[in-house]
Image (cartoon, rainbow, N blue to C red; front, side, top):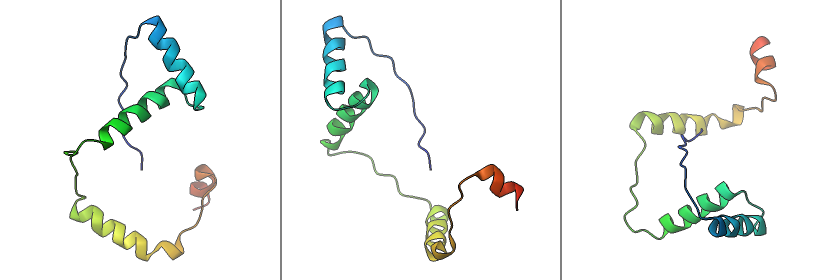
Length: 85
């Protein structure tokens, strides 16, 4: 399941941009990944993070999938799989 993403644009001074590049490089991350992790770490400190429960339909679907997981198999190429159905 993929999560919807939103892009943001942030203006930085040249020294701050350089600092960001170096910190990201130090940890082997892109600048975007480094900033994303900073935000995630900050959000984890919050006490009032909203929690959303799954709908009853999603929960039922999940439970059914768990019961049926022994019948699951890996598909390497979706195009080939659907052609051979």
